[in-house]
Image (cartoon, rainbow, N blue to C red; front, top):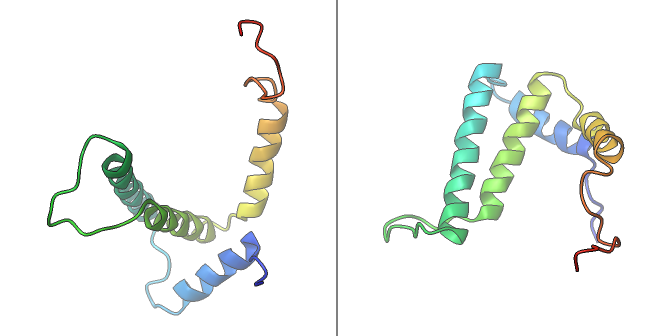
Length: 115
């Protein structure tokens, strides 16, 4: 079984890919526009698959998985372009959820008195 890549390795792989092109990373505003575009494509796929808007007969088949992959790629590009370590960012956000928001949601093991 192949070893899973770390977030640092994933960020390095994307950086190696982008670094082979003269254009390099887009500016932050262009990156945000690109991210918005990719999230829009994900929304469209979600709406086709789970919503009330079926695809037109001539529309190509894409998947939610493919669109999520595109969103992940652009998030990694954005982080790399700004020098952000996504592992550190993830660890900080999980710490916040596990401390500040620890009592925000009803835990599965808790009994609901209204049941």
